[in-house]
Length: 324
Image (cartoon, rainbow, N blue to C red):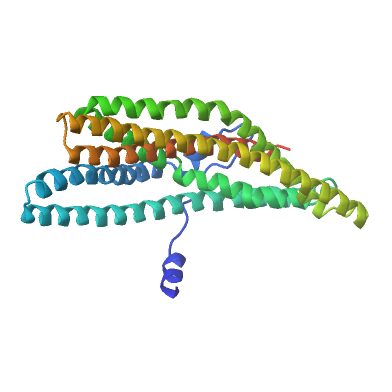
């Protein structure tokens, strides 16, 4: 732990950038907060994505070339190469996550400095309440800053992985690729349809938590009135959060069903082609693994879309707070 503390103490945040301005967008914030680091993080992310693809082909070769021909030497060589790829992949992913964290925390730190300065100028206002300010400087900007660190790089990883894996499957067996696409594409339609409702719930949640923060530090009302008002707000927050969970996790359940159906389709179609002698067992195993690697980045892309939409709502509310 002392070593980690020493290393962390020597890492400095990025230099300051253009502050958040009224009517600025989330895209402006991401670029001004991270600049060319987004390209560097994206390059590392692309390397992680390509390395994550290699085991799919290695699995096929191990089963068809090594096990199928009972070649122990080839099995050892391919197994060693597989291990080397996994170690390299894990190491590079560690670097990626640290890099993302540094970019995100740098953006959060600089934005928090600006918000603290804005709050200090408002201290003398009679109408200014401290609870809302604490929420803006605390959890709200923390979520927005975290998005800066992972936004472009995660998008690059998932898009590139989706393209590479789907191209591989389509090249090896177009029929299986067609069934895979049929199971995955509808997920985007469902996610886009439900996201607007999620955004409204997120905006309402932020407003309620700000309201609760103001009520907690309200000295203009009696203790009983303040307590009753706070209890009503916490009850509303609870109901809003449950409604958000029902929608959010209901969407996840639908996507999981679609993924399971896709895996079953690959298994059934692949099994049929093996019985007909049109493909090998190793190819089917590689396709099942490939479909999993295809469904994971697509799921992450949907998570990115949801995160982007919700962060956009949060950022717009912070911009509005600054402009008050």
